[in-house]
Image 1 (cartoon, helix red, strand yellow):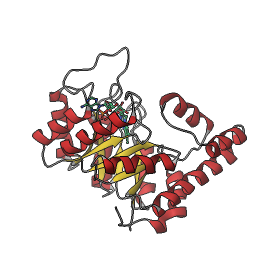
Image 2 (cartoon, helix red, strand yellow):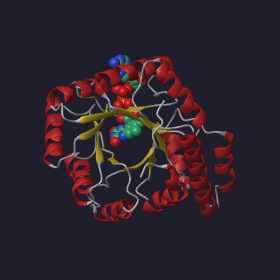
Image 3 (cartoon, rainbow, N blue to C red):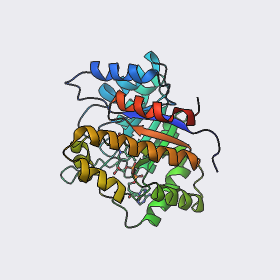
Length: 284
Ligand code: FAD
C-alpha cells in the first residue's frame, strides 16, 4: 500500500501550431505558483509534428518554469527512426520522462508497422535511451479495444514488466471503479504507483465531446444529475463540476491514492480552484 502523501500533477495540451504558444505559456506561468509535482504534455498521434508542439512546450516547462515534465509519445503512426529523433530532441532539452503510448488507431489511416502496442515502444526506448523514465497509460474501466478487463490488465502487466515506473489513468468519474481496478492490479502483480486522472467538467461542450470520445467511462447517477439539471445554466454547471471533482479527490486521498493527475484542459483557473480546495492533502 502506498502511504506517502499523494502528489498533485497537471496535464496540458499543446495548441495547434498555427495558433502559437503565447497563450499556453501564460497559462503555464499561472500554474507555476501551484508547484505541481509534474506537468505532462499531450502529443498528437497523427496531425502535428511532436517536436514543434510537445517537445517545445516540455522544454519551456522544464527549463523556464523549472517544473518536472513528462512528454506524451504516441507511436502507432511513427517509425523507429521518428521515435529516435523525438527522444534525441527531448534529450537535448533535458526532458527524460515519457508517457509511452500506442495512440488511437483511425479507421481510415494505416498504422506504421514499427509499434503495434505501447509495450513495443517501451522496449524500444529501454534499448535506445535507457536513461529515460517511462510511464504507461491505464484504463480503470477497461480500454475500448479490449474484450474484457482481465485481458486488459494482463496486457498492462506486460507493459509494466517492459519498464514502466508508474501509470497514469484515463479519466474516470466513479471512484469505486478505480479502487476495484487498483485491487485487480495488485492481484495481477502490478506494483507501480497509479496516478488517478481527474477531469473537472466545466461546460456542456466538453461533456458532449467526452461522451463521443470516451466510450467506456461510466457516468454515476450523481454526475448525470448535474448534467441534466444544469445543462442550460453554464455557471452552475461549472460550479457543480468543480465540486464533483473536489469530492472525488477528497475521497481518493483518504484512500491513499499515489497521486492525482488533473486534466486541466489548459485552464489555470480550474487548477487554482482545485488546488485551493485540496492543497493541504498533497505532498509539498
Ligand atoms: P496499449 O497499452 O498498447 O493498449 C492498447 C490496446 O491493446 C488495449 O486494449 C490493450 O489491452 C491491448 N494490448 C496491449 N498490449 C497488448 C499485447 N501485447 N497483446 C495484445 N493486446 C495488447 N493519445 C494520444 O494520441 N496522445 C496523447 O497525448 C495521449 N495521452 C494519453 C494520456 C493518458 C493518461 C491516457 C490514459 C491515454 C492517452 N492517450 C493519448 C490515448 C491513448 O493513446 C489511446 O487510449 C490508445 O488507444 C491506447 O494507447 P495505450 O498506450 O494505452 O495502448
